[in-house]
Image (cartoon, rainbow over all chains, first blue to last red; front, top):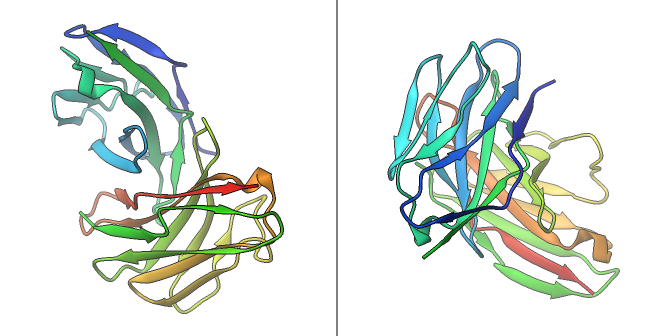
Length: 112
Length: 115
């Protein structure tokens, strides 16, 4: 079946540091890949997506590239802010039906 | 994108009672989804709510515990029945966007605490 593996958190960074959150997946064929963000006390927001190999999703300074050869979709940001503190979820969907398979989530804390 | 609202946003309930959560989408969608997020955990799909047919439940979830209604293409309800403290979670509904890329959009969630 489908699965998503994320690096464990919490990840604590200083403001303006570089961020990488690793995500790898297992799925047959070509899944669509997503990063969702959950700010404290809120629901999930779609951060970015990629639907085929070598696609780069980007939004709000975050980027992730769909790497078929390494089955990865790592999230990066060049300079994090305190306001980026949240839980980040990597997810995939495969085939029809739109059902999402989520990773365990990675909590990011950004300090001044 | 799809705009999704949920009611209630939070509730505190007594053991043995039931709570019905409502989910409204701003456009017509064929499928809606209900997820559970236990404290500090990731999201687990409970069921897919199909308009005009019974919901499809994932392994570990049963209709008697989580009955779902889908009366039209913009609305669904999830009932958490005969609640116990283990049901304390955030319950989220989602629906696909209008684009071709299978992205889903989520409601703000219902935070349920069972005493």
